[in-house]
Image 1 (cartoon, rainbow, N blue to C red):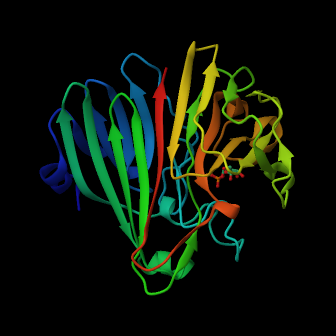
Image 2 (image 1 turned 30 degrees about the vertical axis):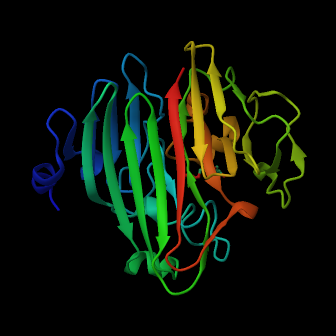
Length: 303
Ligand code: TA6
C-alpha cells in the first residue's frame, strides 16, 4: 500500500500520519497531548517515543542504516522468532526475521479520554522469506499504544499444524545522559547468563542492589519479571520498564571496545544508551501448539 492509501485508510488527523522517512522507508508519525512517536513499518520498529516536555526516551544511532534487509540500530527492534543467534544456524540473521520484514498496518485508533492514547496495530504473517529462515506458519501483531506511557505488545499465533518453539524480545535502547553514571534497579539477587563470555549456564548472581555499568555488559537474567528502573542523575529522570509475559530481562551495553566493531554506532556513543529488554529466551523459550498465542509486552514511562 502506498503512503496516499495508508493515509486515506488509516491516517487520523492530528494523531497519525504516514510519511516517507529515511531510506524511503514508510514511517508513522504519531502525536497526541501526551507524547510523540515515530514507527517504521519496516520491522514494526519504534524509532522514537517522546513524552511531552521530555527528551526522547529511546536512543537512535546517528549512524543507523535505514535499508531493507539490514537492521535499524536503536529504538525498539522486534526480535522474533529467535533472540540472538539462530540456535541451529549461526549464518541466519541475528535476532530473527521480524525486524527485517515489512509489516502491514491493520488498524489505527485514537481515544480522547482523560489521557490521550493513540493506537497503531501492525501485522506480519509467515511468507516465503520467513519460511526460508524458519519453517513454521505464524501470524504476528504489534500493538503500539502511545500515551503517557508507551505500551507495546508483540503477540504471535501458531497458524500451522505443528508445535513450534520461539524466543522473542522487545530490544529497547534507552537514551541516557551517560551510561557510566546511571543505575538500574530490579535485578538484585537474579541469576544471569554472562553473554560477554558466552556462558552456558545462568551461574552468576547479581549481588548489587543497583547495577552500575563500567564495562561491556550482556546479561541474560532468567526468572526476572519485576520492573526495572533506570535512574539517570544527569538528566534528572528515571525510566521505568515494566513487562508482561516476559521471564527474561537482558541488559546490554557494548562499552568502549566492542562498540568499535559496530559500524552503525559511533565509537563514543556507547555512553548514550543502555538496552534493558523484555525477553523470553533460553529456559524461558515459548512453545506454542497450533492456534495458541503468546503476547509479550513492555511498558515504558518516565517518573
Ligand atoms: O540483546 C543483547 C544482544 O543480543 C547483544 O549480544 C548484542 O549483540 C546486541 O543484542 C545487538 O544485536 P544486533 O544484532 O542488533 O547487533
